[in-house]
Length: 267
Image 1: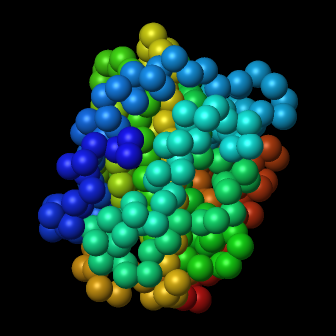
Image 2 (image 1 turned 30 degrees about the vertical axis):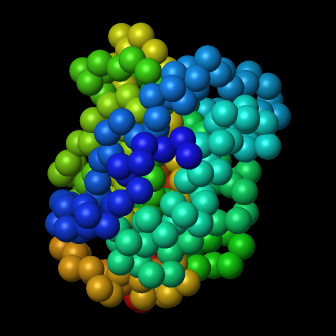
């Protein structure tokens, strides 16, 4: 196994996870075994080929590149495979109390597991897609692994957790090399990455994994500070200004936000 053994007993941190605000989350330090983390530093993914991934330069996703998993290096795939394994999923079930939690078998060539963000990059507040692409089951948990070896926290790059409207940062989970962040994903789990300092010396590298539940009422056992009901929605961004929704180039973001509000109301 490539994950430090201490992190295979997450049930012992269940109370810490469930009681964290603004919604359940947990940061795991020294996540990957030291030798493996060092080996990863010698790997460089192909971010230049048109077929290798997708670049973003928008108001809400800036200087960001995401992979297509089919072209990732073997060492990066090894991390993804372990985080997608039945053994790790069981560990997450023990942590969350979501007894039917599972990892998608789609392969994430569309969702993308490996991300890079350059200095000056931004990922605005948003909630991710609500459903597993193949089955439609609810998306219930996110995991982000920080992979850049050296990072100054003054550069930003951490994971921001916001209130249930995505309008105010409540908790900033810092970008600590070789750490992982796990958080409950609900229709109200707004999160993002504040703009990275232009003076940052390195690219922000991370792996993102999402998990699902076979129940359409997956959070009923968890006390939340907002409605704990799931409903369908696309990846929904909070734009920086209200009038930004009326820009021609933001028409897709406007449509998705409107669908989100309609589904929220009828739910």
